[in-house]
Amino acid sequence: MYSTPVGKIDPAVNGQLNLSYRHVEGWRRFFGVGKSLDLLMGDDTAGPYILFSCFGPMEDEMPRGPAHGHDSDTWRMSILGTTNVGKYAYVDGQFRFQDGSISYPGDNVAWGPKGGYGVLVFGDRRGWPACPVDKKLQEQAAVQQKPFSDKLGIQDEHPSPEGSAIASTLGETSLGHLDSSFDTAKDWDEVSPGIRATVSLMGDRRVGPVLVLLKGDPSARVVPAGNLGTETLHVVVEGACTVDGVTKTYGDFWLNEAGAQPEVVAGREGLSHVLLIGERQELSKFTVGDRDQNWIDAVAGVAAKLQTLL
Image 1 (cartoon, rainbow, N blue to C red):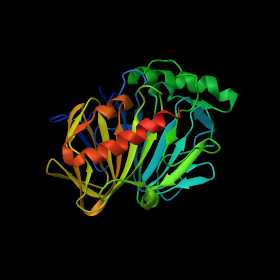
Image 2: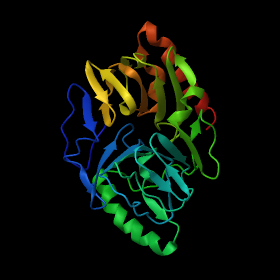
Image 3: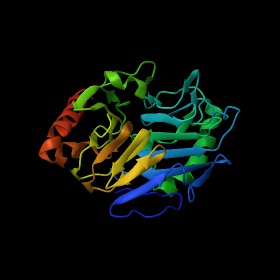
Image 4: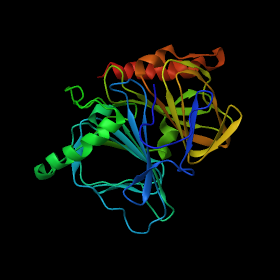
């Protein structure tokens, strides 16, 4: 079951929670001048925690936090603006997977002269707290983060001790991370006519999420309609789409409750899209119509192969 434990937003309507970076009323204040929204979905104990961040225009680089790591695998993307991690800078449509328990240099969230839209996924919510590299800061960080974990309703325990569990069709992590972009979509596998996708697993090895990144040609059915036993999160990265006759554009995102999943159809300029499936074991049970069976066979088949690598 999904929840938005921090912030006040409109409730779901007909099983769909509709959100947008253009409408951040009710989001919590973030670093004084920005806004953020916290979303939990999937398994009640080890499902993903997603942090959406939104900042107005700024010319100077956003300050960075100290070098640190998280027990959870993470995936972050800049939808608008630049996200800095050490010597790396990620701009619109670029993203980074980070192995859990591997520290990295100081980072920030998406910012820029046109504003910043960012998304950060902790594959296993239990491992979201940051652990600074500087041992002098570790106790202070733990004390500061514990009340927020309590507010989120996250159990105060470490994830599975097996280490990182990232498996992706994009390749393996190197030096703790894997970088890519929607600009590489021409090289992704075609899962059905006019639709290319990459599939990744992260977080808990049994109930963690499936991250599907999709590039659809104009008017393509990018995500089929069907029935699924877990929540799905959708984010428009570029272009537009229609969902139940409603147009979704750049900056829009939404969450469907478990059960009926409406189809996502690309607009006239095509669609770059993020689909996060809350619990991986439910993907193989995703029932769709005959015309879309190739899509589910391809995506679920790839996820099953990736699972054998963990």
